Length: 599
Picture 1: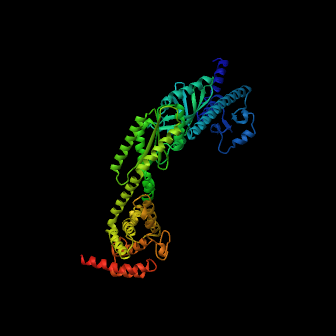
Picture 2: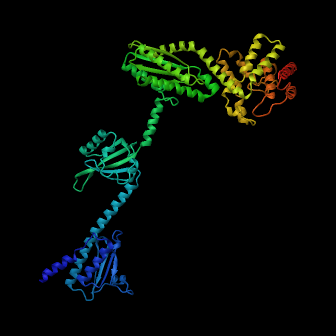
């Protein structure tokens, strides 16, 4: 072979390094070429760069030889090439001194290797950088996506998979727009980014998860360009704002709605009045409604029962009004309705439907009935403002309330009395026996007819406030705790509030309030003493104590007649009026004897 051609082939072989090889294999390639082509017997490749460090190594040295010493004192048989940028060096040694020709080939070999190592360094750095970049994307909380110009997802991180509820790999190839609820809006923004070649942000992007549920994201959109500057797709971040959106919607709902009933609140109602005034959708009708007797229910049965009837009427109102108007709870027991394009005849028909629904509810819930007072008014044109129109409806409501109020309050009190009678099974006719004892004492004392009537009624209803006391306390078999006693001692005040709401019981409301006062002033709730206590209550105290002791009680056994009389005598002057005790004892003896003879 011609020497020049051989040298050319040799140089080509010397300079052909595969930078794609793994580090260990590249080092083996260096050893193989050096030994085969250059007759190298010893070789050191030392690289300081962290990316190339695995390519380092030494070859051909005996165990007792120090490679570093050879590098420090190179001779005629050796060749040392230090790589630029201080990344390391290549040391080679052969058996004979190096000729000029051989040194030239060594130089070509070293520089070719240096070029290969530079390429590998760049590629490895890019690979590590990309891996680091991918790791950052994979671990970041925000979702990251890359899509092509057709909208197909080519890459997304784990956070986006978790946000959308897909398994890893399932989103690949899916069109990004297919998971957007508002596709037109999303497409328009992506197109604007492409046309204007500038990044944009979507503050609220409504997305559909794999299971069909809805989530919300805040998304950024940027262009992806290749090395030549050609646009190849889009990339961006998606931050989950679902919780924030739900919180905002909740706040918006609360700002416009009543929390208890779910109807609109007064603020929204008043704003809607202004809007309707401007819209001029005549005829416009308004309804004003009040829930009658709510205070009695709250005072006797407790606020949970009052809340229940508020919710019940709100549901009836909402169902009857539907989409035709705006129904609102304006506060307490007050409701209002605005009905655009609703004539007087139509609003009167709506009121009839509401009353029919209330009647149906009362038939199904006789223990907790609804009574509604309503008024309405209609404006055919803009002569009256809607505020004035509502005032007219409210005046009609007051007229309706006056008509219904007395009957309704009496009906509610009767229902509460019935509830008290149902509970009387515990005391086995306590009220009836009390009435008989009180009537006998009042007759002996020659009280007036009015006092005797009040006393008879008091004997029946003195425990009316107990309808608001839980059964767990009323029927408890052991002694009451201090907290339970505190609740039980509220029943005179509860009974007083109920009685004042009824014209039939208003006359004895003060007697109900005072029926647990004691002669020495240690009673409750007012702490009255002596003759400050109405005589009717002093008589009731003796009758109540006697019947309580001689009748069954869940928390103790009954005592004999004689034991009860002894106890009353012992408490004369402290719990009882001593003069009344002297009058009452013979009467109690007489009633007891009559009862025994009748057995």
